[in-house]
Image 1 (tube, rainbow, N blue to C red):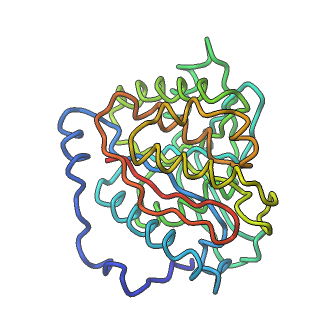
Image 2 (cartoon, rainbow, N blue to C red; image 1 turned 30 degrees about the vertical axis):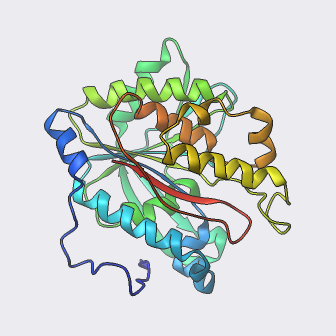
Image 3 (cartoon, one colour; image 1 turned 90 degrees about the vertical axis):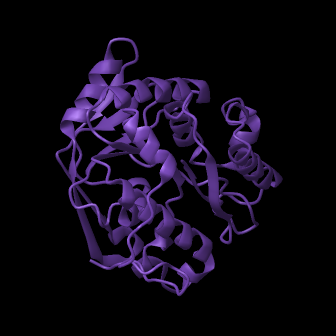
Length: 291
């Protein structure tokens, strides 16, 4: 399998990774949520896809390397990752309980890279049963992953040989509903006996430039700035309550993933760190972690 290239300012992988102090303290208090982050998922992050274009998103690449190191130091048992690009239903969040999960990037011209992870049917079913009585969920068993899952995991899970993956796909419901889902998901995580990482996969506006995938909208930069500033200032309700018209005009795909994550960390004393933001191809790429 192809590995991400290393720029000169990236720490030597043979160097022991630093331990995140805040996460370490939370583990001693029986907090089983040990890691949470927001990542983009552009296929060009895969070296055999991006090739020379990878240099244009060097900030994102470097930040993903840092996240990979931070996550590795915490040795999670399970990664719950929320994606916008799998099976999305109107009123049901989808959870994948496949015991085997696979990914490739054939559709993006990479016929070489092939990835495989273990799923966690037990955790997936536990989440499903917790919600099913009041908030119906869509339970699927699909081995092949969408790129909203596979691109972040290419980095984050590359050295976690025993980690299990639980993919989620958000629904078309409103932002508050996804936030409330995240709060209940936190309860399940904290009652678990496994160390859990939660990743919100999603790109921000797809309308930052004239040649952007969704064309240009002046609201794109406004939306991205509001997301980034709100995370830096820990004003998370400003995200949850953001004007729906602004969100729609920004042509984003990460908002609901982020809302679930904000619910998962709600009430936990975490510092927010925006590791990088850039949009060289008309799409906003944000990498952030909460420690």
